[in-house]
Image 1 (tube, rainbow, N blue to C red):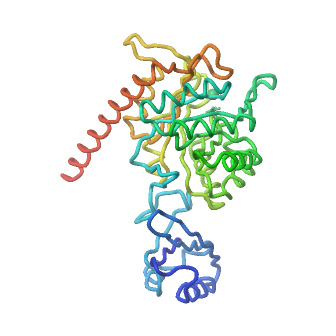
Image 2 (image 1 turned 90 degrees about the horizontal axis):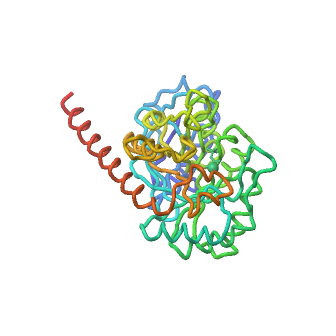
Image 3 (image 1 turned 90 degrees about the vertical axis):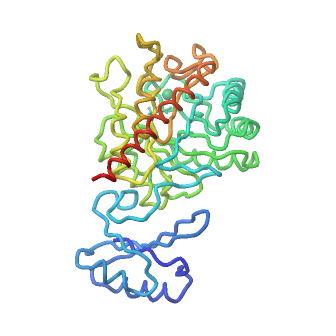
Length: 373
Ligand code: PEP
Ligand code: MN
């Protein structure tokens, strides 16, 4: 059960202290306080855990200082969508709103290789007014002898160039908690020219200690990939780990499932789950068409498979798109075969716009028909 207090009933007030004393004194109930700092106001929530079945929502609702009470189902307590749940489906980071009703393109390098390539990529993004990108510095590779990423050595120039080209948010995978410290240090050292959304890769979706440590920091939002060989429920629980440690600025990314049923795509595209994740949780949903398809294969209609699956995700309401691009795909040190070329970026953006427009029209029609119910 979640007890949301009135805006002026903050932890410093007497009303809050009295409320906490009462709630903590209830038999079989433990409490945990969470403060959500929004742009305009801070919302204080008290989580009641334990024998909440014996509590009546109306009784708790009538206590002094209480604004609203939500009874949560067992699943995804914090990130889940529950009945009569007024909690938001968005968060702000570095001036950008990430929500279940927005759409942002994170086109960029799978792995940072040279400064020149980073600069070319960011210049192309700025020309199209795109404020987000993806840049891999720490790469989890199947083969121990493959390029593992430049790590912290590349961070200062990646961040400086981001500042130069108005890039506000970089999605960057971390595979160890020390990487978060390295990112924080490099941002400070370069004067915080940009922001970072920490990415948890599909191989680490159930690395619970990593999830806990990334969840304990509140500075950076987190984009967590669905595990490629586990159920959706298991992956959503992994996202809940981040929130249970305090970080609720979480984006959930679909990236295809590892099964040869998906052949000839690298992974079986699972973008039909975009609306499912939005229904079950309050997280913005990302799609990664590049790691799903894994190649530059083109359909007979002239569209690349990557374009096709992107449009499928967008028309189903996706909120972020993580896509691999490279100025010279044949020279890329990681995932060159699936990277799109910079010249294709304007075409990609326009194709996304068309799919988004179709989604918005579909939504408007759905609202009209729902009103007739
Ligand atoms: C990536 O986005 O670079 C990546 C390695 O993705 P995934 O974890 O989905 O394989
Ligand atoms: Mn990759």
